[in-house]
Image (cartoon, rainbow, N blue to C red; front, side, top):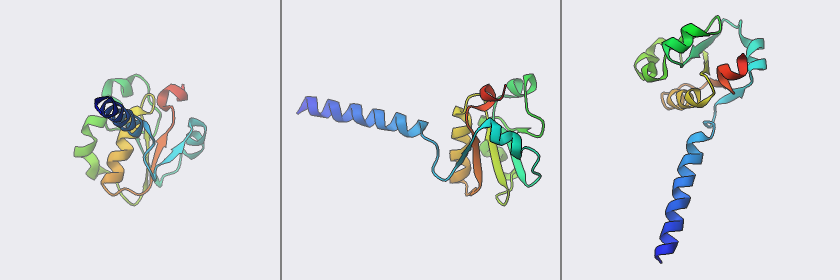
Length: 120
């Protein structure tokens, strides 16, 4: 019985880790190649959720820097009517940001796969 509970606990832990890494349901995933084609669309909001230091060191013109830890407070600066395209360094923070935006009622949310690491 105890061994069974240990397996069950292990499976639950694995499930929660996998769940956190999975792309958010209803979030569009694009490559940096697709981003380059969409970059000049004035109807879209481009948000970089990396730290201010990372953003200053290397950023894509047209992106606004809202570090992930400030996104919840600054969410009012974004329009729910326009698509929000999110980038970070590797895709982990942008995935978290897309989850936050979806929970706040944003319907058009896009994550850039691979982030700035894939861009350069």
